[in-house]
Each structure stands twice: as structure tokens, then as C-alpha cells.
Image 1: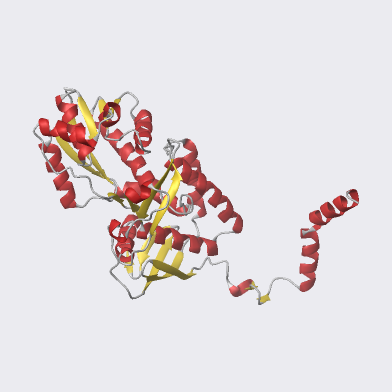
Image 2: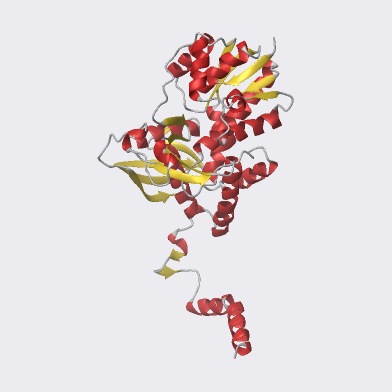
Length: 398
């Protein structure tokens, strides 16, 4: 029997796919969930039970949290990447790594096809199909929901007729959790003017009194929170998210352009991601040269855009990653943070690589590296080209 690997989330769409692929298309279904930080052990067990109940031959959960960080998130940190200066690309990054992991697993077990439950209306279909076409081009890509243009009602009726009843009531808010943040969609995000209510967010405000945090970075990686050191940066991000989410930090609504050409809105909460990015960026401002910061910022915008638009496997991404890696040699030190309800403050940094050292002078106060006469000469040379420009044009415009 032909094997198909199904990207399985346990929701209505992938439940329909699991049954349809077996009973209508005659495939042996191997359900796979790729965990990028959104599932705990209990949730994985429930997914397995559901997949087997729906007739899947096997269920596999691929835990790729550390790989997710190593192959993608670290470069988002190095680049301080926020799409449209707002969104940490939580879902964009996840889907790319999930698709790649699914494709590699399908090759491993000798599958002839690979399937997902995307509709025809979002970015994910392009991310999945694009990666599959590159990593496993010989495999057929099956997308029943998109191809059959099914409504939720039609899917529920099909499953009921096949003897699979269940609670497929659509949640008021669509939640997608992962290591790098949680996206939140609802009727409000379908408009241009409504904001998400407090109850839409999975993490609620629990703490009112401010707390102090010390975040320690080593070559760009978050490795320590206060006195607790972590064996891998992904573990530090998880812990930071746990701490900061109790202050309801990291919420916002992103407005952006989709791959398919329409604009869209999505709410999110990403306390760990936002704090990591902002603290890292502050440390970089102290330890990198001005042109390192400038060029890296430009490259980071492209990196985030191409990741969002399903081009993660373009070789230019590896080139940008090398630049990012090289820029982090001196991004080592501590960042001091104050957590408050719904917000945070970056208080300052401490690093042996701090270029703001008083050894060479203090801005606006005193310098130790040049004299007043040096400045006069420099200022004249520095503005010489502008002096020439204005003199020439003044003469010609008289």
C-alpha cells in the first residue's frame, strides 16, 4: 500500500484528511506532528490517540525545538528581526522548519506522497508546498481541503457519515503556540479597526509589582536569566517567556502583506521573543560599530522578508547567516530589565566589549583623544564636499 505522510494537528481539517486519505484515496497514513514548542507531553499523547482512532497506521511526534532555534531563530535574534517593526515572525519561522522536517521524515520512511490540511486562503500552503517541492520533489503533494474547496460543515458531515463523531466546534479565537510566540486570530483581526480583547490572549496578567531581570548573552545567544544558566538558548527563551508572560508583555497586532498578495492582520503574544530581541539589540548598540549595525539591519530586513515569503532554502539566506554569525563575536554581556504590567524597561548593559567606555571620553562632557584644533580641521574637511556643492550652485543660480 502506498504511504502518505500527513502533517497532523488534530483539528478538523487534518482529521478529515486522515480519514479521506485512507478510505477514499487508499493510502496508508502516517500522521506526523512537528513540535516547535507548542505541545507538551500530555497534548502529544492525546494527538497520538486521536490519529490512531482516525485510522492512521502510525503517529510520530518530531521534537525539533533545539533544531528550530539552531537553524532559524538564532538568526532572527542576531538580526533583531521584527517584521514591519512589530512581529517576530512566530508562525512564518515555525512553518518553514515544520515543512522541512516533514519532508525529511517522508523521505526516511519511503513515502510516495505528503499531505497537509491548508486551505487556499493563507500563507502556509505556499510555505509547505514550496519546501516539499525542493526537499522531496518526487513526492505527490495532496491537499484535500484546498483541492475539494470544503466548508467546515461539509468536513463534519463527511466524518460523521464515516462514523467519526467529535466536538469540532470552532473556537472563537484561533491560537497557534510555539517557541517564538503565539499567534491569535479572531473576528477582530479580520477588520482594520478592532483590537483583540483581553480574554483572547492565552496568557493573562498575573503580576502587578515590578520585577528586575538580568539577561546574559554570550556571542549573541541568551544563556542566563538572573542566576540560572541554561544548556541551550531555547531553554532560556522558554523560561523567559514563562516569567514575562505573567506581566502580559509582548502583545501586539501585526499588519502585513501575505505571500498571496493580500494584506492581513494577526494578533500575537511573544513575551520571550520580544524581550530577547530588544535586550539583544540594546547590547549590540553598545558593542558593535555603527556600520555593523547599519548593514546588519538592512540584511536582517531581507532575511525576515524571505523567511516570511517561503524562501528559507534560497542560498542567499546562508550567506546572510554567515554575516550574522560573524557579527556576534563581541555580543557578550548582561542586560538589565524591569518588568511591569503590559510593558518592560531596558535599563542598561554591562559588557567588557562596551564601546561607550569612558577611557576615551564621555559624550557631551570630556574627550581624551583630540584637541579643539583637531576638531576644527576635521569639521572643515568633513564638510568640504558640501561647501563645494553650495558654492558652485550659488554661483550658477545667481
